[in-house]
Structure formats: structure tokens, C-alpha cells
Image 1 (cartoon, one colour):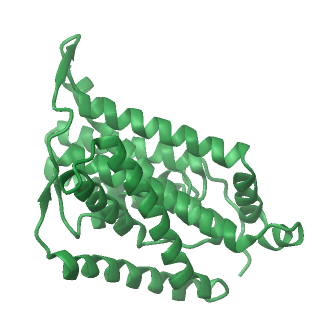
Image 2: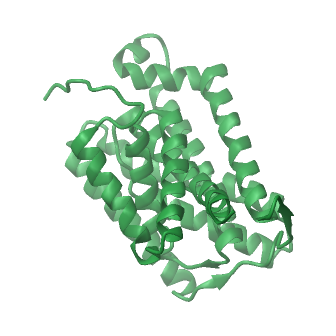
Length: 290
């Protein structure tokens, strides 16, 4: 029964990683950029949700929607100000810019509100027992919200005009331009969707772990990036599977008595993936012209 409990905890944690990882993989799939500021968008979303609940007295779902909307707008602003000018720049220039944006967001938040942590209100603390396993309403909520958002994302990508444009730009940017697709708007839409998912992850992370702070996006952001690499960077189903798998692995590591090595497990996985399967679980090896 203990293993089933850890599996449930791992799926809950993995759902959060998966939502963040989707933003990484979508942006990389379109413009081949690792947006290291994405973890900080997740942090901003968590704080927006917190203030929506505590200051404005909103419930969980209104706070979730507000956080997603604000983060979508925030993601577009970041893309337009920081990344748009670097479309044709070297990858190292874009990477350094992403790190700079990440630090700017973190310490900008600290400057505005201070470095102290906050505690999310207690939501959905009820638990019920199923065949001897204690299942919390939080775990059910996190998994339900994550699954719904992933289904919506799949619908957007495969069934809408914007999604078709995203797939076209990802496949061949120049050909997409010749077909009349507005590449700039498509890239902005990608940032908006990915950032909205990060905002949602921030709110459910706050509900699940209670404590939030301005530097909270660093470790989950890096782990979500590892999850995206694990599944196959640039592949949406890969980010989902990679996030869930990473969450379960972390929970198993804790269950066998190595809780202090929990964070290290993610980096061990990254090293192993880069050595034995650099393209990830769902990725295909492809030559890259230099």
C-alpha cells in the first residue's frame, strides 16, 4: 500500500512538472530556444494566484484562470521585448538572454515585494481511503486540472487554425511564411499558451506544497526542462510523459529511503538520457546542419 501511496504522490508531482515542461518543449519546437525564464513565469503565476485568493477573496478556479491569463500576457511581453530581436542571433546569445530574463524576473519580484515566503491557504485538505490507500483531494484536483489542460492543449494544437500554424512554423518557418502564416503572431501564441500552462502549474504547486517564494521557480523549472529532454524536447506528448515519469521516479527515490537524493535523481536521469538516448523517449535522431 505504501508503494501505491508513493505512486499517487509521484503522479501529482509529475503533473506539475509536465505542465511546466510543455512550455519548454513548445517554445523549443518553434524557435529552438531553451527559455530558462519559464520557471520564473511559473513562480509569477503562483504569486498571482496567491494574491487573487488572499487579497481579492477569490476561489481556487477563478484564481487559476486569472493566473493563466496574466502569465499568458507576461509570456508574450517577454517574447516581444527579449527574444524577438534575437531570432537570427546565435543560440548562445539567446541562451544568455534567457538566463538574464530569468534573473531579472526573480530579483524584480524580490525588489517589489521582498524575499519572504508566503503560505497558500488550505484548500481541499480532505482525504478519503480507497483499499487502504489515503488519497487527498489535492492529488485528485492536481491530476484532474492537469489532464483537462493537456487535453485542451492537444485540441488547440491539432484542431485549431493557430495550432496548425504552430505545427507549420515548427516544421519549416520559411515555407510557413510563403504560405501566408504570420510567424511573429504564431510564436507569440506559443509563448502565451506555454506561459498560461506554467501559471496554472504555479497555482496548483502552491495549493499542493503551501509555501511559495520568489526563487521557487528555479528547481521546478530545471526539473521540468529535464522532463522535456527525457520525453524528447520539442515533442508535446514527450513532455507530458517525461513530467509524469520524473515525478514518479522522485517519489520512488524518497520511498526507498533516499529522500535527500531526490533532487539529484533528476540530474542523474538527465546525464543518463544525454549519454544513452540524447533524443529522448519519443525523439528521433536527426542530423543538424551547422
